[in-house]
Amino acid sequence: MLLRDRVLLRTLLNAAGRLRCKTAPRNRSTERVTVCRYLNNAAAVANISADFELAWAWREWGTARAEEVGLRERANVPVILGLLDDLDIPITWATVGHLFLESCADHNGGPSHPGMPRPPINRRWEGDWYKHDPGTSAVKHPAWYCPDLIRSIQQAKAAHEIGSHSFSHIEFSRECSNETLVAAEILECQRSMGRFGIQPRTLVYPFNIMGHQYLPILARHGFTVVRHRDPRFVMSCPERDSSGVYKIYESMGLHESRRYHQPTKASILIELAVLNGLCFHFWFHPSAVTGAACATIREILQHLASRRDKGEVWVATMKDLVAYSEARERMRIRSATAGRVESLRIECPIDGERFGDPEVTLCVLSSHAPLSITATASNRPEQPATLSFRFDAGSGLTTFNVRSSTSDVEITWPIARRSESEGSRGRL
Image (cartoon, rainbow, N blue to C red; front, top):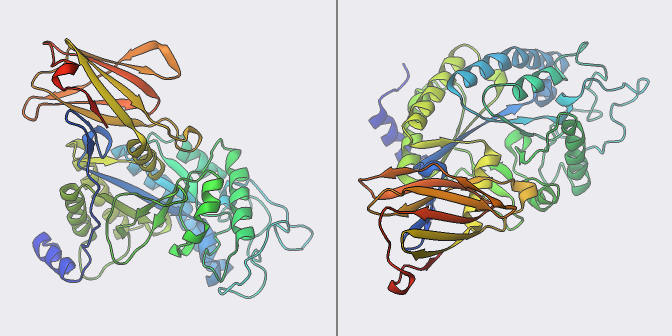
């Protein structure tokens, strides 16, 4: 019988060192303005990644078994998409680049993809790296290609991210890879994904073998985030590498446990994230979402949706989370008050090509709700926009969102604020 008691399971996990977390950074604030750690001032953030591979991840088991897993995954993906749509939960689909192809040629019996470099060492099977690739099409061999499923993900109700899992599911270890191989895999992914209008920003390392030595290469090709595994810590906030690529720590993966109830463990970790302002990251293989595992993931997602609906957890894709983190860290705010109008001058020198123009949540302390808030973007100074806001009388916080491209915000209060000469000017 699986352990479901939260108190007992938490005690056991803590004793085993499986609840160790890194410390969240402080909120960035002046006397009056705070740049919130997460969107909408949520206490924590959660994201989910799916290692979308079909047969490519299982080739060392032989072609027949790899195709069996791939076809099972094909059947599972629509079910997963339906569940995510029902709960409006977006996830990051870390997708093998070959799956975007409609077909590939067999080159008259020669090896597939002759223009692609091979790993310097292959520890998983004898023969060519592409020996299992049928070199046909999605119609003839649907376990190796799935442009139809890619389109289904793009058309889903939930705003999913499609990231990269390399082109051919290579291993990023120092022994089995090199810069030439990694760069070629990235470029081939970008070509195959570009046909679908996708520019990948997230990479999940195949086999969960970290390849952080290649982060500078990833950065040069526009990537902003990787999934990180560290057995010492179960949670952290996104960490920015010197290359400019962020690491998101995995918290738990979907697997069959004979000792404890996985949704109970997930609820413990989510509560820990809320209490400490951290990121809970859950990952899974779509091929595993069958039977009891399907019920497990449904229960975990329902719990996440419940905490999200209470405003406690922001559920974000990996690229959206790090875009927020980048904007938050780079945002600088100067405030000044004249009568009833408080002016915020904002500078946020973010790389828009890589990170986009994310929303960032600001909080302003006051005893009264504002009458209005307007914002002006640096690229549209003649078009001020009226912002929605929330005022909490208990905390005295007015919360609102601005884009990283916002240059000026004007807050009109019902009564005059202190003038600049009385010390209300602040800088963040």
